Amino acid sequence: MTGKHFFMGLVLTCLFFGPLKAQDAETLSNQAAEAYEQKQYAKSAELYGEAIKRGIKDAGTLYDAACSYALAGKKGNAFHCLDLAIAAGFQNANHLQEDTDLISLHTDNRWEAVVQKCRAALEAYLKTIGNRELRLELLQMEKVDQEIRNQLIAETKGPAILTKMQEVDARNTSRMEEILKKYGWPGKSLVGKDGAGAAWLLVQHADANPAFQKRCLEFMTKAAEKGEVSKPNVAYLTDRVLVAEGKKQIYGTQFKLENGELVPSPIEDEANVDKRRKEVGLQSLDEYKRMMKAVYQPASGKQ
Image (cartoon, rainbow, N blue to C red):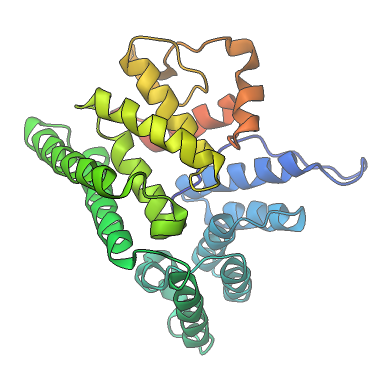
């Protein structure tokens, strides 16, 4: 899976009342992601299929659908979704080849053609990027960031791994400060959509330097107006900065552990939070809560 968009929700079927609206297709994909997290691959694949029928065209979601189909043993559907994902903009050929979800496809005679198609898409994508070396550096920093956090979730939360994570974050923050000083905010034109996303994630985890996070938010907000930065990413960092300052968040993206339960940090005008979330491309707060609990709060209740 790409792991980008584990958004959860209730499945709504509509047999007699006409086609579902766009947000209902998104809801189906959210539920599909939740089923994937629960290792219910056949169910996940079925839900992704319904979401695609109802208009889902996001490359990451289409790729995730391919993974679920592959894990469910439906190779034809998996290859079809990979073709759709590449046509929609997926071009991470290295991830495609390394993703263990897709191992069952490797011996199929269609596999090599998909890999080549993805590599061609990557070459076309790279031609649009101003600084390829910086993009690769940001992606590598992001990879290290995610590896240490995955260890934290899957293994223990003892002092050793926490210390290691803090060291990684400090190193990444220091480098991001250098990048910001030299280039300004690294947006899509400079480092591509994935590189810009990596830059945001690294700053999102720069909690030891809240002043730097706030400065980056100012850069990102201006860059978003030019289409250089993802609006959801701006929303996440906005909340991060507000919570660090002891203020109420706006979009409900930041959670805390309270009596063993993951709950959102206080939200400004919570009654209208879903309206604000929708405006920046985020799923409902209830769906996001389900995702957070599925990923970070296993059924055992252990953290």
